[in-house]
Length: 637
Image (cartoon, rainbow, N blue to C red; front, side):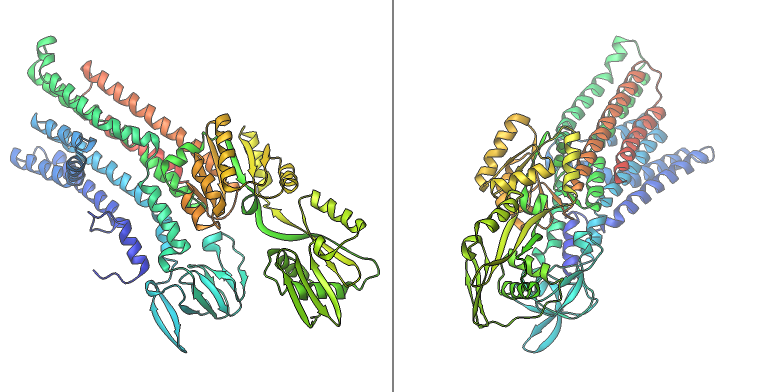
C-alpha cells in the first residue's frame, strides 16, 4: 500500500501493528459479527423444534466462532505476550463450559453479549480519535515550493527547514514558517479557537493547518512538517491514549490474580459441593459453570478505560489535551496551583496603558517622532508603542541618523536636534517627572520616556496586561479551597501589583528556573498535591517537578513536551473546567466499580443459594458490563 501524504503516515501510525483493517471499520466489523452471532442464536431458538440435534448444535458452534473469534484471539495473544490470564479467556472458558454440559444457548448468549460489549468498547476507543483525525485532515498534503524563480507543487513531507513556499489566497498553510513577503489575514481558529482572522505581515509567524484568507504569501519554512504544532497535538493525543490511570493500572494488575482465583475456585466447586452438600454431579458442574460466568470481572475491568477515553476525548474537543488518564484522574485532588506570570496569567505582550505629555508641546510632532524612532527597534516595548501610536494619523519623520544603545534606548538626530526615547537614566528626567513615573512603577508598569535636546516631553506607561479570564479563574479556585501562588522572574513591585489585582494568595519574585522548583518543593510540603501552569523554557523544570504540569498552547516546545496537559486555546478558564471534568470522571468510575462489585457479589451469592439459572447469570453479568460502558460514555457530553 502506497503512503504518500503526511496525514496518511500519521493515520497509519495510529493503527495497532496487528491490525490491517481500518480503525474506523473495526466497531462495524465487531458489531456485525456480534449481530450475526445473535441472529444465528435467535434462529436456532425459533426453529429449535424443527431442527435436528446436529443442525441445532452446528448453528450454535458457528455462532460461537463468529461472535467469539475476535475476543478469543485477543485473549490468547495477550496471554502469550504478557504471560498472564485475562478476562477474555475466562469468558471463553465459561462459554465452552456451558456448552459442555448441554447449555448451548446460554453459552452462545454469553458470547453474543460479550461480543456486543466488545464492539461498544472499541467504538468508545475510536470515538476518542475523532478530534485527532479531523485535525490531521486540516494539514495539506502538498505545497507550492519556490526554487530559482520556479514554483512547483511538491509533497508536504518533502519540505525542509529553509525552503521557501508560496501560499495562495484561500489555501491552508502546509508547515510552520515566517512570512518573507506579503500581507494577509490568517484564520487561526484551528489552533487558537478564535474566529476572528489575524492580520499577518512580513516577519510574522504562521502555522500549519491555518488558512490564508486573502493575498499571496511567501513563507520560509522554520519547522519540518513532522515537527509542526499539528504533529505535536497528534503525538500528545496518541500518548494520552496509551497512558493508564493509577486506578486502571491497579485493576489490570488485579485482573490476572483474580482470574487465577476464579479458575481455582471453579475447579474446586466442580466436585466439593457433591461431597459436602450432597449435590448431584449435574447440579455441581452446572453451578460451577454459572460461577465461572458470573465471577468474571468484565464489568470491573470496563469500569475505567471507556470513561477515561471519553473524558480525554471530550477534553480535547474543548481545547485541553491530557497526556494520559492518570493526569486527568489526579487533577481533582490538587490542593495548590502555582502560576507563571508572563504569558500565563498575563498575555505576554506589553500594551500602553497610560501616557503623559508636557503642556504646550506640539503633541502631533512628539508622537510622530516617537513612532518613527521606535520603528527602528525590535524591542517588545518599542513594538507596543508603535502599535499604540498607529491608531493616530501621524506623519512620517525623516532623520539624519539613529543610534541604538542596548538596554537603554534609541537616540536620533532630527533637523539638527537630538531626540531620545528610552529609560529614565538614558533620557535624563527631573524630579517631577520621576515622581510621576514612580507611581506607574508601583502599579507594576514599565515607563518609557521621550525627550528632545532640552527636556523630557512625554512618557508612556506599559504593562503586560492580565488575561481577562485570569481573575475569574483565581476566584473559582479559591472558592474550591485551592491555594494559589504566582512565580515570576519580574521585580517584586510588579509581582505584588499583579498578585493583588488577581487576588492570588502568595507570590515569589525574581525567580530563576531553580528558584521556581524550590518554591514548588516548599508548596508541596504544605499542600501535598500541587500543579504548575506555565509557558516558557524557564518553566519546564517546574512543570516537571509538579504533580500536574499544565502548559499554555502557545508556549515553547519544551514547556509543551514537559507538561502533563496543554491548554491549547490559551484559555485559563478551561483549567477549572478540567478540574470539574476530573471530579466527574472519578465519580463515574467509583459508581462503575461499586456497581460491578455489587453485581458480582449478588450473582455469586444467588448461585450458591441455587436460585440463579445460567441464562439469568449470563444476562446479569454481561448486562452489567454494558451498563458501566454506557455510564462511562456519558463523559463524551
